Length: 410
View 1 (cartoon, rainbow, N blue to C red):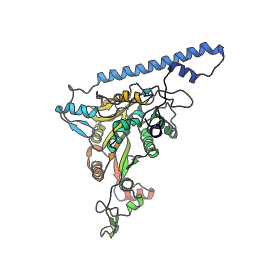
View 2 (cartoon, rainbow, N blue to C red):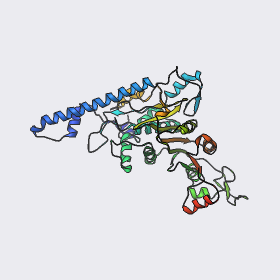
View 3 (cartoon, rainbow, N blue to C red):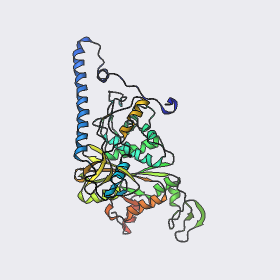
View 4 (spheres, one colour):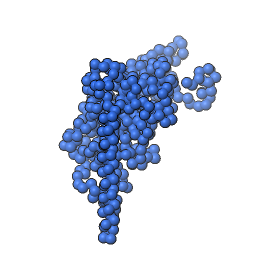
């Protein structure tokens, strides 16, 4: 690997127990030696139990809730595509090419004040967020998976989307290394992450109130300011490059649009205070039906999952709760590359799912945007959970004007 371009892997070989001992204690006095050895050994044993307990739970869940050839059904959906019962192996092929990100261990410490070289027990939402990011970048870029997965490597200091970079941004949301994240917090951090390490021809929009604003999204897409977008005619489509002609209907200028950037849209939503309410199951299915949906961060209580599809009564998920080693070198990275793919889809029944989600959409061009608009405005299954508006309300008088006009919020 070219160190000047790609950075370098930190070599973390050596005895893990002594590393923890050194991190926990800085004692030279011989009288503390027995206490030091005892506590160090206890901490290592605790980490050992936590790791293998987590892995045992993962394998039990994968065996108890599999999606296999026996229970595969017609109209199973994966990332906006429906599969018939005869398409099982096509489905498995597509599923097994989704980048899967799990717990890792033995990486450089995430914290500067304590040794934190594994994210077991606290990093599952971050891993689900990285899966959403990989799904997005895989759609947007033509790079091979190898290059994308390098961007999240824990021991690669230059990796722009690593656990370490996310944990650093988490401080802005009062999240210390080792703290658990909610799906919505992860959404805001992904936006910051892409602002700090931008991707060519990709802009981000995150909703704060389950609403999408046309002027803001189109200004990102067309590289115009929102005020300039508002000044153009909306009577006809594709009208943002000024032609110097005035519309006879609205009196605004007419122009021709050119879509410049793809848009990564995130919408944190609540479909129940605890579990998802039964009436919103079809709402979640309708979102996963959209070709523009690149995945959803959700899960069980305190257990984040990456949601990629559904069957009649369950969600299809990728589970990050499997502890695997972090690569310490380029050679190890190549050897571990297969650990970033999963060939065993897992099902989680809808009645076990928590009600908090962060939905991701990828809008590459105007046709995809028009398709998302139609879905948000016309699909009754959505039940007004995500709305679309021309612009954000600027003050209370504007809200009152809309209310007085007879147009009410859904």
